[in-house]
Image 1 (cartoon, helix red, strand yellow):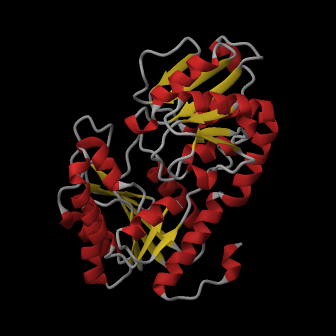
Image 2: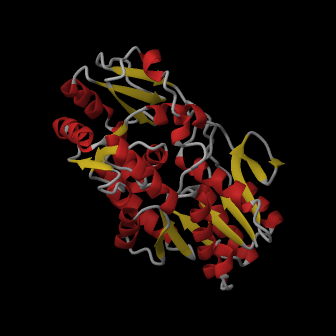
Amino acid sequence: MHIADITMFYAPASGGVRTYLDAKHRRLGIKPGIRHSLLIPGAHLSETDGVYTVPAPALPFGKGYRFPLRLAPWRNVLQDLQPDLIEVGDPYLTAWAALDARRQLDVPVIGFYHSDLPLLVSNRMGNWVTTNVEAYVSKLYGNFDRVLAPSRVMADKLSALGVKNVYVQPLGVDLQTFNPSARDPGLRAELGIDENTHLLIFAGRGSKEKNLPVLLKCMVRLGPRFHLLLVGSSMPATVPDNVTVVDGFCPAAHVARLMASADALLHAGDQETFGLVILEAMASGIPVVAVAAGAFPEIVTEHCGLLCTPNNSTAMANAVRELFSQGSVAMGKTARRHVERQYSWDTVVNSLLGHYHAVLGSPWPLAANG
């Protein structure tokens, strides 16, 4: 079976989609009888280890992202590859290129709905465009043979737009990289805080939907016995005294060290379609305090962390205090066991293969799930 993934959501500092595709490419590459090709934008046409770059112009101030403008180069690469199945990872030109290639190749195309496009557009342009964007999503995703969504909340949004054949397919986490063994006992000394200070962490982009002002107000309420580490690009320049900023993209191994060395993850984002950083924290052996919004209620169980009212710094501060009163260490160990059972990339890839076999109409041997 030859599977081709195609997306523009792939850049040096990109997030969840690239993490998903890289993990998938590694695991499919060692499965017998399976070939995996990955089509991503680049400066020129090239191929390395099954990863094909297709020419696309760089976005100004786009932090390495490229935006395809011509359909033909993408369609032509797919036609040359002759895959048995195509998976689309974004709702833009590459999606239409895949559908165009389907007409030539007569192969099924799966759409993975990684981003809530109507919400993203309304955040930036206002609600006046929402109806048109929803109509676009309905039309595009209605063309796919099967649609995957990373969470139930996302699947329900698609179904409400009239999209059929929608299936929930959670993402996974690298259990080797994000591991309690990455803990560094010297981190507190680096930060200038003592052993009795509760160390919290948030990792990700400092974009509007992450609601970082809520975190900062929460830290003011918590006071000096708590310290927050903000890790990622576009972080605020002015923060309370009990907040340290590591501004800029950090490699996964560096984030894993910081994560495992903290006591809990703090997340105020209320529009997450999945929340990979939540899984990374739990895999690192720390519990989570997040808001009861987006996909978080689906992945944060009562034994792995606490959820609080969105956009409410007082509620978040109360949840942090409650977490430590309940015993954060034991909860972190439970969180690690939970992701080991439910969210390993091997589990995710085996589930994906079930979807692929279903749309191809071929049997999916249970033995292959092992």
